[in-house]
Length: 117
Image 1 (cartoon, rainbow, N blue to C red):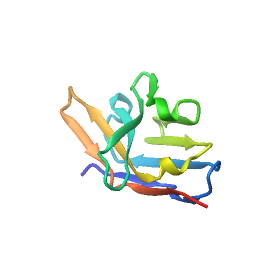
Image 2 (cartoon, one colour):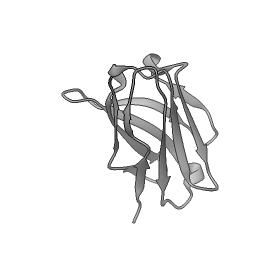
Image 3 (cartoon, one colour):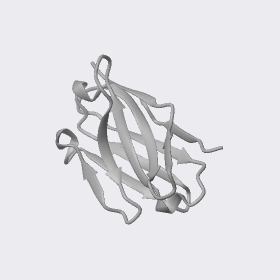
Image 4 (cartoon, rainbow, N blue to C red):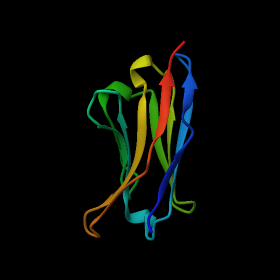
């Protein structure tokens, strides 16, 4: 059974940093596109950052220059380094693994990030 388990969320002050991690129990992890999504209360889930199997990354404009996504294929993990956090970054953050060719689309249960004084 595929599992994605996020960790690293918590309460942080504005301007602070957090590092989220996602551990995946996935065969062929290295060929999956991995992504972080977030969902704030009352808002739709949005894609925050994505990293392809080849290591290409992309970010939504609001986090460019502040967030960095990376992956470790040997450890089957994907991380999101977040810095200069703002209150508007407050949300549940979810890990996603996707491979259209294999028909796989998997989600973790999420980790909560709260940016507040």
